[in-house]
Image 1 (tube, rainbow, N blue to C red):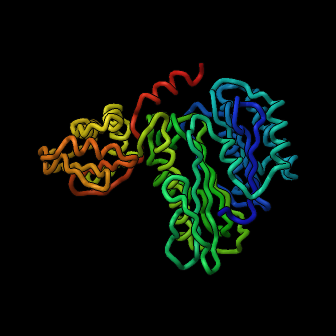
Image 2 (cartoon, rainbow, N blue to C red):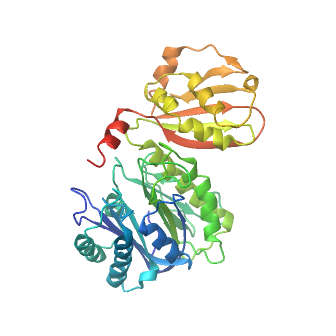
Image 3 (cartoon, rainbow, N blue to C red):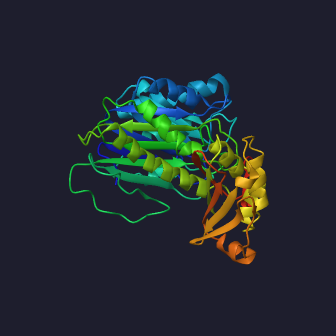
Length: 404
């Protein structure tokens, strides 16, 4: 289910050897917009361009290419990004400062602008309600498309999120007035918080007038994409864009709007972590206690030793406690308990500061599940979640051969 007043397109212009590689999202009217961008000091031209155009709080369209990051390409790369916005604006009958640009792919290569121009013109003629060609156009090393949607009914609890990985079944629309949030994302490697390496686009037909969209998006990003890590590397091209065009005529409260948006973004973050390069499973890390549980969870999630143990289905709890201990956040080992949740069972590995009795073969078999939860309790204090994946042979192969 997609929101009213948005159209999508995806075409193959030849930047990649196969699959679509240029896409567009277009709102029929000027939409309120907000964005969150990479914190890397080495940034692609599209990041600076899109940050500038979205600073006015509105957008009509997004144009995206895959197969080339257009990063570290000097002034020519800046001009090429501007050209992309100009060509898209001409195809849509709008202004260049109403078009955000995103690029993803190999760093350090100039775009073939003849192909890009041809692709933008073709995409402008193929806009429609089906978002699948667009989803295909933004992928690089991703193995699967990533999408999620939910409805928002003012005065009701947030609806269940429908997504590509965890709940692919369609469900009927609400009986009363409602708005729709629809999100797509790409990301598979070079994934780390602030913000997790990815491109993400969420559109809604809710009326967001009077809402502080940048603040809402920042809070939601901190609870979703910034709780995700695959390998600890933050990319040069990350961005998350939110467009709200009001086409449904429905207004929700700030809390309702934020809850629905968060549901979609958390789903997309989990899908990205599960599709980490060479990954076989989603690993969810829950940490309770200490002054900074998120730092501990991220350290565990980025530990190669923990991640390879997850790939090997090895219940090596010592690696998890080692990673927690080197995060630099004080805690007392005597207060620590550690469990793994996998295969519909909870397996206690360490309890009240001492090893617990468990069956290693049974736990190893359970770890073959495609969703494993590491539950670490360090005593009193706040809690945090981080989404990551295991490290397998495929991660080394994909990244060793990525450029060559």
